[in-house]
Amino acid sequence: MRITDPVRRLVAYTPGEQPRSKRVVKLNTNENPYPPSPRCAEVLAGFDPDRLRRYPDPEFAALRAAIAKANGTEPDRVFVGNGSDEILSLAARAFVENDEKIGSLDPSYSLYKTLAAIRDVPWTPEADDPKVSLFLLTNPNAPTGVMKPVSEVAACARRFRRGVLLVDEAYADFASGNCMKLATAPGNRNVIVMRTFSKSYSLAGMRVGYCIGPKDLIGALYKVKDSYNVDAVAQAVALAAFKDRAYHRRTVAMVVKTRGRFAKELGRRGWDVLPSETHVVFAKPPAPAKAADVFEYLKSRDIYVRYVPGPLTGDRIRITIGTDGQMKTLLDALDDRFSGGSGGRAAFGARRKS
Ligand SMILES: Cc1ncc(COP(=O)(O)O)c(C=O)c1O
View 1 (cartoon, protein in one colour):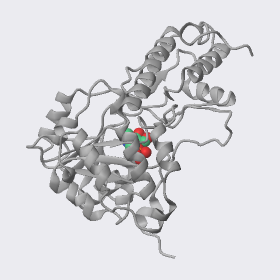
View 2 (view 1 turned 30 degrees about the vertical axis):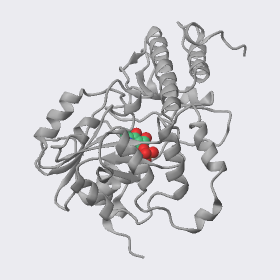
View 3 (view 1 turned 90 degrees about the vertical axis):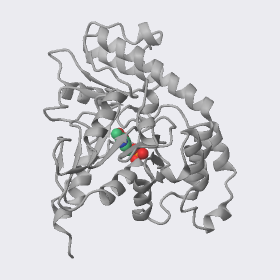
């Protein structure tokens, strides 16, 4: 059996753990703690199975039109993918020659390096490297949660005219701003802004992401995609979630509020917390505690967070914002092991009896 050299050498992307037990507090894979809009359940309940006999709309016209309208742009500047991960993979195929490079911030979403390896081209953190033809700029960034101002991203796009700047806004709905206007601007030649239904719309299990950009770049993504890349159920459910603006606003506001209170509570306990504009906090425990040990300890208490070893990330843990109850459980567990706090009491109510 012949396996190509790049695939043989490939170190595959490792997704976060998906423990099977329902008892665990799962704050490790940036999922939303709240259910998707009730409109999604209605669409699923009313979905006619006969529609599954037929192929789905290959151009996801209804969803595309809704996304275009909400962003004040034309449908032919919108692309929808089977999760934004698919869009990243298609971009690596469409915008990078064999002798070019893929760039991204470091640290950032670790899949980017894997995509470069699959495509068998070098990865670099240097946007000014003349060989970079696709730069994947996560904003706000993951795992740090930190956001660059639009002016800085716009300046980056101007400097990077020779290539495609894909601004990965997976977390932008939790942020105080975003770069969408760079993508929809009439004069835009090289900026694509990408969003996902996995985080703020609570649809990670459905796999829908989208992006907006110049017509020719969006057209190139259409050319290289699978014919029917977004299934019929996903198109219908994502559209229902997208249209329920009030629910989206409400659940995003709940997450943002919990994030603020939780970050403050960690700060009171001596943790160094980066200012987050996502639904994640990236935090360093106070010495002598080590991030790796805190991660293992929390796991022993059935609380899953993410720890990525290495010089840029190894002194912190990444905690996805859950419900107030989940954050309280985590703070209580920290206080059982490390002195100095008052459980989640101050911010999240009375302490549970154990
Ligand atoms: C920065 C970033 N981009 C993209 C994705 C993938 O999202 P999707 O579920 O839409 O494939 C993630 C998932 O964690 C992410 O962190």
